[in-house]
Image (cartoon, rainbow, N blue to C red; front, side, top):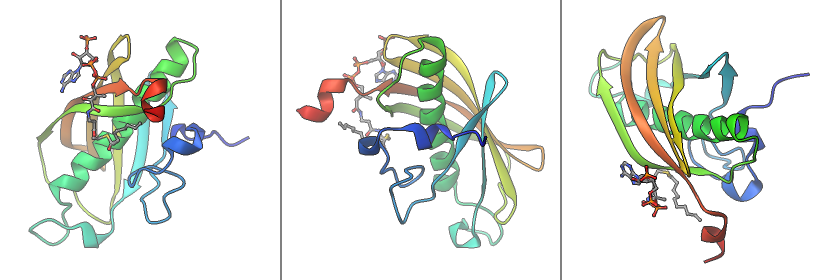
Length: 152
Ligand SMILES: CCCCCCCCCC(=O)SCCNC(=O)CCNC(=O)[C@H](O)C(C)(C)COP(=O)(O)OP(=O)(O)OC[C@H]1O[C@@H](n2cnc3c(N)ncnc32)[C@H](O)[C@@H]1OP(=O)(O)O
């Protein structure tokens, strides 16, 4: 049986994200999975997402990849540790340090590691690498949407 991506387990009402929503026809449909105690998401960026120099990805896309994978990691961490299905995590804070240019047309690997789980908050440490070379690292504070937020 094929492992389901975290994002493919979100309830329909939370599956419209441009980055990772399975129900967003125009989106990137990023997929995140467990890899031991870490999580991983792989994505190859089309050259149309180039930054100022051909062949390299623009920084906003790097942040987007880390953002979406961070939210998915927080969701999965809650499901694994609290053994309770989460609603959806949104980004309260995202820090990215750009360490080296990230290429387009090369598979990128985004990794997440749980730093802290406290109440509705999950802090995730993140890296983005290309062919084993670290291109960006950072962390995200993810907060779970309370169930009654969607009704108000
Ligand atoms: C129903 C649909 C609502 C969905 C709206 C978002 C849809 C967009 C999805 C995305 O694209 S995610 C990227 C953009 N992010 C956003 O648009 C989120 C906008 N911000 C918010 O909605 C609220 O600020 C947020 C839900 C993130 C937090 O507000 P809350 O009032 O629910 O949280 P609260 O103040 O109770 O804080 C919970 C914990 O998070 C921590 N926290 C909150 N904001 C923080 C921050 N900026 N930096 C660091 N920590 C933060 C806070 O300190 C606390 O930790 P502790 O329990 O340890 O004290």
